[in-house]
Image (cartoon, rainbow, N blue to C red; front, side, top):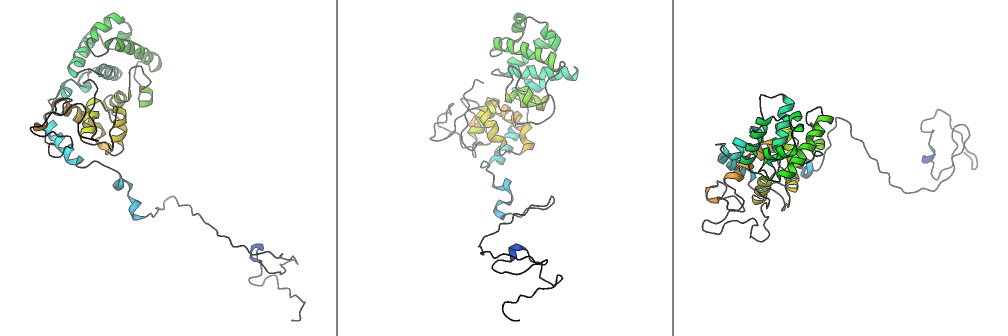
Length: 319
């Protein structure tokens, strides 16, 4: 073909329908007589992101495939747990005979039983199980229903629950909470943690225990002073925790969920009988060989603050 003459290719020729992005540096007519303008070629990298199909498994680095395996967990915790179970199999601690699960009237209507569970846990804060159980017995004899408590004056209610810890404040909380239950929940109690903790005198520990005992739903770990203290002594927390709520969050981060309900009952009784706050009975504990806080046979007793440098301390709350 002579210079200066351009050849028009047939419309149906293979490879002719070029897009403009393919015409870099070449001037050639497209079908219809349109010219493809000259453009400088630019070197650019094209990143393509692929969206996973709904049923497609993502293939990851083998080191990161199983997140649970890489999650932190305490040393020897399974052995320690089995030892505590062995120590608790007698079920003869105060919590086994007078805890919140033993204080309500099982023959009452379901909403009344749930209300009694709520009140028993409100009374139990900063109070020994024996004192709580005695107060609950007097309340049930008086009549422990929403309507009956609303009809009871503060002075009488105070006499019925005395000497539980902070009994004056608890009289106020019980009255306020009962009023809310009457008008907002038709005499029943909330069925979720978010609404339970809004009730006067109810904290996260109580809320999770209420969900477990009253509603038979596991929403979280109930952490009281025993669970808080023992979790720190056994190093079941990655770093020292200062409050029961911090301990709850730390435990729930690694402890299998199917143990959340059991762990409160186990550790409370263990703390009442063996792992005492001030003078733990390490000589009688099956964990003495695997407990980081176990005291020597002839050494000084553990105090509320573990004296070893850098070691987490136990709970300091009133038992």
